Length: 68
Image 1 (cartoon, one colour):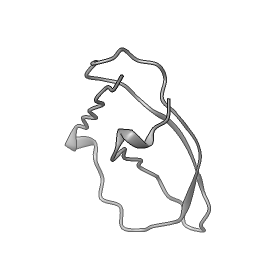
Image 2 (cartoon, rainbow, N blue to C red):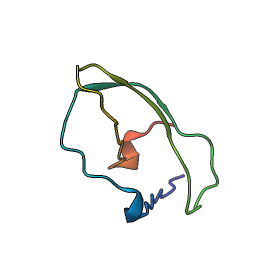
Image 3 (cartoon, helix red, strand yellow):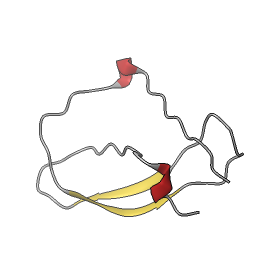
């Protein structure tokens, strides 16, 4: 069974970030959600491995990469 996940973000809540710092994804999980639903979420834990304080934004490009 395949479900489509659409993420919507309000543009007023977005910021342009100039500095970059490397990071490492420690864990990622997708809680169970109904097939064919329009909304879902993913829980991701990211660790900053660089020296610059940073915020990280994770984007899912292909759901085929997520093993359930």
